[in-house]
Length: 234
Image 1 (cartoon, helix red, strand yellow):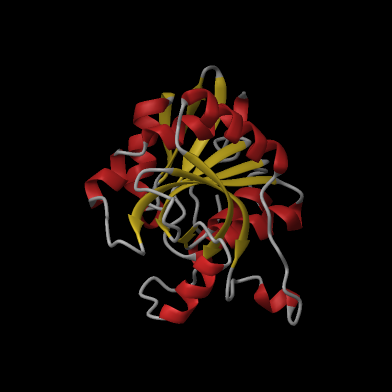
Image 2: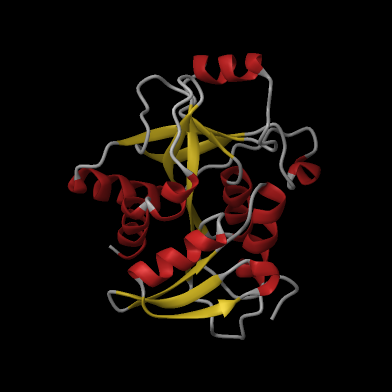
C-alpha cells in the first residue's frame, strides 16, 4: 500500500491504463476486463485489475491535472513496478481537421509547467511517447478504420484558461489538441525508463464550441480503450 493507492503487493499489473475519471475506470474494467477486481478505493480514485485476452492489466484513475496524475504515476512505477502506462482520456481539439470523437495519439507534449519543472529549471525538456507503443497504436487504429491523428499536443496546467493568444499560437504551430496530464506522464516514464502513451478521444472543440456530454465522456469512448489494450499487448 501507498499513501494514495490501497492495493496490496502483486495486485497491480505491469500494464496500467490510466483514465482521469474514476467512473471511467470502473466502466472500462467492467466492460473490457475478465475477472476485474477493485484494488483501490482510496480517496474514491478507483482502480481495478483483471485480464484482457489472458493478459493482466490494471485500470487506475489518476484524477484531473498533472499534480494528481504525477502522484499516481509515481506510486505505480516506484512502489508497484508498473512498466507500461497508457493514459486514456479526453481532449479539446485545436485544429479544424480534428473532429469530435476522433482519436489523437500524442507524439510529444508542450506545456507551460508541470510538477517536474523544478527539476529541469531553465531547461525546456521535450517529453515524448514511447515509439513502440505509438507505432502499435497507430497500426491498430488504421486496421480498425478509426479516424486518428498523430502529433504534438498541449498539456495545460489550468482548465479554465482564458489566454486566447496561447490558443492562437498553439493552433498556428500545429498542436492537435489540449488535455491536462500527458506531459508529466511522459516525463516520469523517461525518468524511470518506462513506456508511456496518451490515447485521447476528442470530447470538445476549442474552435467550434462543439462538445460531448459528461455521460458520453464517461462511457462512450470504448474504441479508445480497445485501441490502448491492443497496442499494449498486440
